[in-house]
Length: 137
Ligand SMILES: Cc1cc2nc3c(=O)[nH]c(=O)nc-3n(C[C@H](O)[C@H](O)[C@H](O)COP(=O)(O)O)c2cc1C
Image 1 (tube, rainbow, N blue to C red):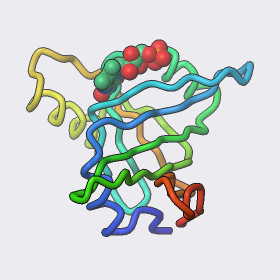
Image 2 (cartoon, helix red, strand yellow):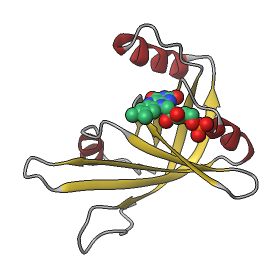
Image 3 (cartoon, rainbow, N blue to C red):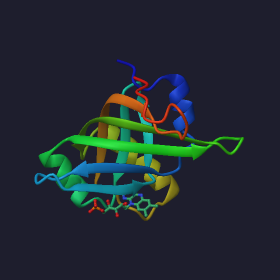
Image 4 (cartoon, rainbow, N blue to C red):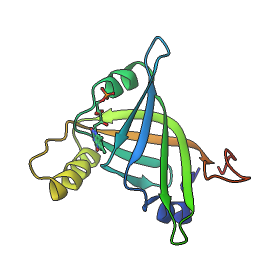
């Protein structure tokens, strides 16, 4: 399934920071801002783990995550999306290397520890207005 269409990919590329929500085994939610992220494919997002602690602990016990990404369009309207899916962590290989390059190009002194790869199962609009909360795919 292509949850992340080309149009959506262009849209969310305008979001600088995304919010990544996880949950621990007791059901306690945790949400963190993440700057180093990108769309990997039609159904995968990459978020780079540099400083994550509770976030990766949570993913190891429960891979279900939610992500919100938002930006303001050229008319000043707030546009936002919510992604839900399953995360896995890779600490070597091609995708991890891609994450390392992304971080090192911007901040060479940072040392990424892993790649959080989210297989997106559903996408919702969170833009304010009548379609807020509507499932898009
Ligand atoms: C604006 C902003 C951007 C951040 N970007 C990243 C990032 O790209 N990768 C990362 O691992 N941590 C990033 N952090 C740190 C995490 O938000 C958070 O502090 C870290 O995951 C530890 O929290 P946790 O124990 O809940 O996982 C960022 C923090 C801020 C305030």
